[in-house]
Length: 107
Length: 180
Image 1 (cartoon, helix red, strand yellow):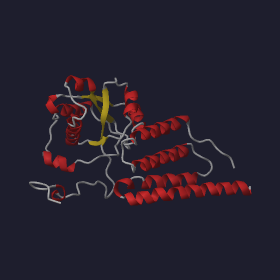
Image 2: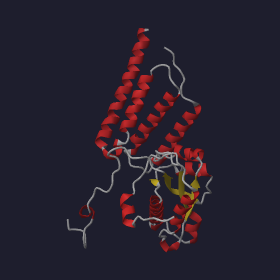
Image 3: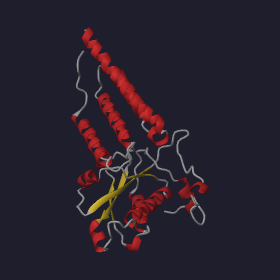
Image 4: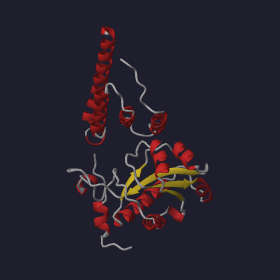
């Protein structure tokens, strides 16, 4: 299994700008916007990975990007649902980490 | 440019637009929106604001990168700044809330003027003021307080577009606030 570098330096800079600006705005925004901004940054990261046309694990990145995009604006109209989504998403990502570790171990 | 939209109908039908088409905004329309800002109420007629109007896609993308509240890619972005030198000249105190009220009334004048022209707008306050200062080369005495995204709106998806959900009875008490 290769470990392909897929994100460009310019995309990394754009995400860095977003994260540092979000740290700034979080000083005055409502607390719930903290998770919202991190979900948006995670979506931008997944989008940048997909822009790099990964040869492996594309399905995972497409799935997580789609899930993040579909659910992020629930922060506006369904805060309990948004909180539940935020709590559940790491489980899915951790599952991917575990799957890859298992693949490496068994290889 | 003229309009056949009554003011109340414009207020009622305006929505925040987060998805814009690629169609450019004419300079004439942009200048009309900025002229509307000049006619906004201003406490003590102090006229505290300066504006930076952006029409270049790359410059707007730079601002978007440091503005978490910006989701669309508008062809025009107007940055409203409060001038600290003007504040000092007018002896405006730190706790004077009229300064931010003026930002709001000016913003509304611009949004309604754009709506009259068939343009969509999105008010934006979630941005890094320091980042915007750096990106626009603003002098220290100008504080970016508000940004207005302007462009032609993409059609809303089915069911999209909210609006006032509260009745006046839910937000109004007549005469005095009721006793606890």
